[in-house]
Length: 78
Image (cartoon, rainbow, N blue to C red; front, top):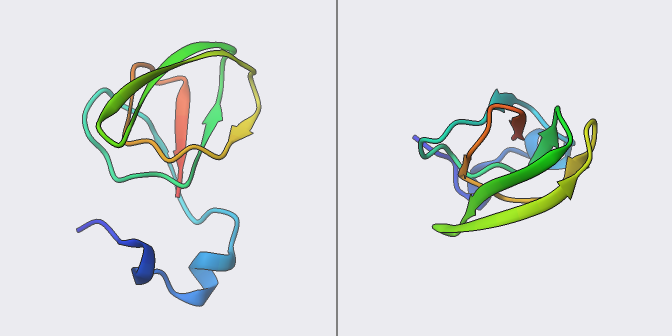
Protein backbone atom coordinates (compact mmCIF):
# COMPACT_ATOMS: atom_id res chain seq x y z
CA UNK A 1 0.00 0.00 0.00
CA UNK A 2 1.32 3.45 -0.87
CA UNK A 3 2.26 5.85 1.88
CA UNK A 4 0.54 9.19 2.15
CA UNK A 5 2.33 12.38 3.15
CA UNK A 6 1.48 11.86 6.82
CA UNK A 7 2.54 8.20 6.92
CA UNK A 8 6.31 8.77 6.99
CA UNK A 9 8.28 8.37 10.21
CA UNK A 10 10.50 11.30 11.22
CA UNK A 11 13.61 9.42 10.05
CA UNK A 12 12.07 8.93 6.61
CA UNK A 13 10.71 12.44 6.25
CA UNK A 14 14.01 14.16 7.08
CA UNK A 15 16.19 11.74 5.11
CA UNK A 16 16.94 12.88 1.58
CA UNK A 17 15.68 9.59 0.08
CA UNK A 18 15.09 6.11 1.44
CA UNK A 19 14.49 4.13 -1.78
CA UNK A 20 15.17 4.26 -5.50
CA UNK A 21 13.17 2.47 -8.22
CA UNK A 22 13.56 2.43 -11.99
CA UNK A 23 10.61 4.29 -13.50
CA UNK A 24 8.19 2.45 -15.77
CA UNK A 25 5.34 3.27 -18.10
CA UNK A 26 2.93 1.77 -15.55
CA UNK A 27 1.53 3.66 -12.57
CA UNK A 28 3.86 3.65 -9.57
CA UNK A 29 3.76 5.28 -6.16
CA UNK A 30 4.33 9.04 -6.33
CA UNK A 31 8.02 9.75 -5.88
CA UNK A 32 9.69 12.60 -3.99
CA UNK A 33 12.19 13.36 -6.79
CA UNK A 34 13.67 11.90 -9.96
CA UNK A 35 17.25 11.11 -10.95
CA UNK A 36 18.06 11.24 -14.67
CA UNK A 37 20.58 8.66 -15.96
CA UNK A 38 20.78 9.90 -19.57
CA UNK A 39 20.28 13.50 -20.72
CA UNK A 40 17.20 14.08 -22.83
CA UNK A 41 13.50 14.80 -22.97
CA UNK A 42 11.15 12.76 -20.81
CA UNK A 43 7.40 12.52 -20.40
CA UNK A 44 6.46 12.27 -16.72
CA UNK A 45 2.97 11.79 -15.33
CA UNK A 46 2.22 14.32 -12.61
CA UNK A 47 -1.27 14.41 -11.04
CA UNK A 48 -2.53 12.16 -13.87
CA UNK A 49 -1.29 14.61 -16.52
CA UNK A 50 1.54 13.80 -18.95
CA UNK A 51 4.12 16.59 -18.96
CA UNK A 52 7.11 16.73 -21.32
CA UNK A 53 10.32 17.86 -19.64
CA UNK A 54 12.93 18.93 -22.19
CA UNK A 55 16.66 19.27 -21.69
CA UNK A 56 16.98 17.27 -18.48
CA UNK A 57 20.66 16.72 -17.67
CA UNK A 58 22.25 13.38 -16.86
CA UNK A 59 23.28 12.85 -13.26
CA UNK A 60 20.88 15.43 -11.84
CA UNK A 61 18.15 15.09 -9.25
CA UNK A 62 14.96 17.06 -9.92
CA UNK A 63 12.34 17.70 -7.20
CA UNK A 64 9.41 16.34 -9.21
CA UNK A 65 6.60 14.19 -7.79
CA UNK A 66 5.77 11.80 -10.66
CA UNK A 67 3.96 8.47 -10.93
CA UNK A 68 5.03 7.34 -14.40
CA UNK A 69 7.81 7.91 -16.96
CA UNK A 70 8.18 7.10 -20.63
CA UNK A 71 11.75 5.88 -20.05
CA UNK A 72 13.74 3.57 -17.79
CA UNK A 73 16.47 6.25 -17.83
CA UNK A 74 14.56 7.93 -15.00
CA UNK A 75 14.95 6.72 -11.41
CA UNK A 76 12.18 7.52 -8.93
CA UNK A 77 13.50 8.52 -5.51
CA UNK A 78 11.37 7.95 -2.42
